Length: 231
Image 1 (cartoon, one colour):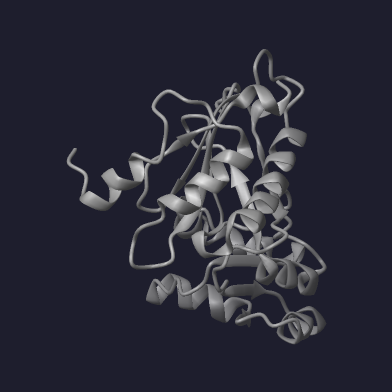
Image 2 (cartoon, one colour):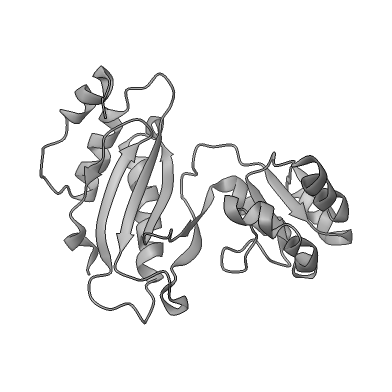
């Protein structure tokens, strides 16, 4: 794979074979952001678990102290007072059967987070084939199936992100924009890593955090020294 001049210049900022401490990696990753747009900084954490087993799933949500830098569009499936509360909290779209029909008939997906009250789960189930593959299905673990939809909307707008294992036992998550600077990115990184470590399944054996890489949208990966995470 050929890389452009900007990528190659960014790659020269990283010492080959070095495992960076988190603060060093965050400081370097900000310098590697060379694109014309404000790049997202992401972490990729490979865990020593087997996602095929139900008792080794790692999934949850955490509110990043400094948000993600992204405007989050929220869809709330609720009725009555709960719908009113969602609107008051700043939800972008609120409804019930009407929203489900809109998604099904128009393939409408102009939202980033779906929040639902527990009594709406029968309706939500109809959208499994559409929302599931896109990672948009509401879930109690992520706090997106809840009676307190107003709180869920506020948290989503404030920068709440969901982390979950993919099929290769890796968690991919944004921790903000390069423009945040090292200090804010470090605070977000610490919050996310603490949540992932706390979510370690009891069934997990051996080394939990196998590897961790930090990278911007267009930049090279920076490998972290995972021994510092107390495996």
